[in-house]
Image (cartoon, rainbow, N blue to C red; front, side, top):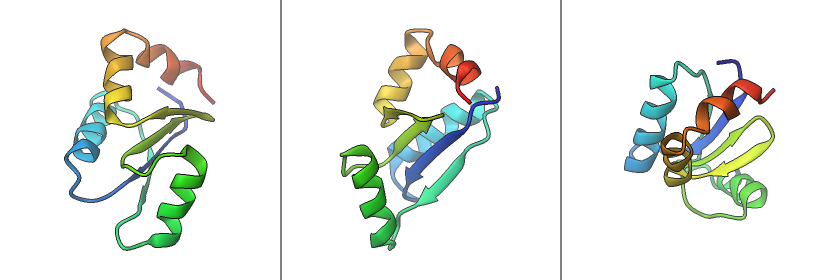
Length: 87
């Protein structure tokens, strides 16, 4: 899969761990932006997503949301298509 994936996360958040695992199971490389103790990066995440919780995930330019949203795409069979068509 060749999509550009970005994930804002914290180190110990269980949903971040699950999101990492799902992306890794798809053999997707992704850019992870750790917001632990980085208030400016957390503000950037909130400005981009409108959400305060982690993880926040983008596939290409599309904000897909958090882990629950990513897992829903997987259950619906839409995640692979999104990953393969995103820049």
